[in-house]
Length: 371
Ligand SMILES: *Cc1c(COP(=O)(O)O)cnc(C)c1O
Image (cartoon, rainbow, N blue to C red; front, side):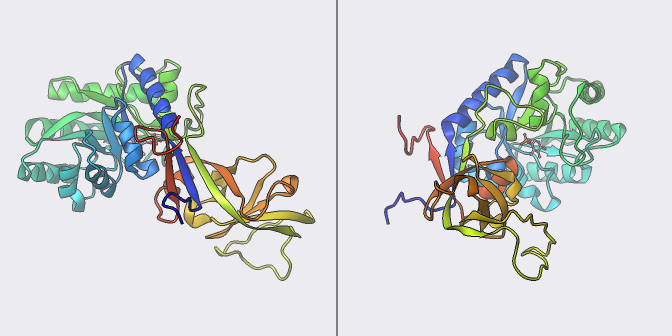
């Protein structure tokens, strides 16, 4: 076995395509005076990927988890880091140690961060989150938000209030639009009046807010977006720019069985491996291929798509994915490696498991496929 032999399932990351996505998106943002926080949690903050973000001109590298912040620091990457999940009280020490800035929505946690920053002799930057209807994190009451801002500004000496932000399109499926963006700007103005100075950042959300930058409808005071998915996959629901690569990631899996079988299960039907009643369509005898990867690797099979036309996913258990290959039966045999497109929902799992090998194309390291 040679050192660089591939083990399947495997995800190949084209760092050059990802870098081009980043550069193109950042350029459009900068044209609208918007800075970018590059969100790397979708690819588990793999150092090779974070390095591309860190060298791209993002204002912060951002992620949701402390362990990812630590692995970024351990990889020697010294970009400013932002924690984008509002922190647990139990992780305050690490928040201050490992991040430069964090999103906040609770005054008890904010007090604890200030005390810890004092202990560590640091000034920690905070952005207050406002909930404008998506009903995940954020202050709901405007007065409570302004009070927190004033307290940070006047009394919590080891914190610096850098701005306010909103999160949308996550739990409540709320679409960023002129109305909620103007609501954000107006709340930011209330905070600015109360503290007597302008805020550095008004952060209008994540990838789903990019559409408003591209179509020129983002209010000009919104000047920071936190972008992950649209960089990694080149698109997000409702926004499919023509200038981005949609194939930064390629999932590869090996065929371990390929034969004709009935399409309707034989015997007494009960539930599948996950306790679910499943519907099976009887299409007669058809060629099926089994590939050695399953839900443990990528989550849900609806989040991966075979690249070869004519290949259809029938289902999956923990370690197997079952494909209908009747339309291409002469082109597939045991030992073949099939390619799949991956969506964000599968990427978070694929990059977060020891079972999947990750290889890189391009990037500063140019580890293989030099051109
Ligand atoms: C995950 C996350 C983002 C990035 O979301 P994308 O859809 O990947 O751009 C931004 N902000 C917060 C608070 C997040 O949790």
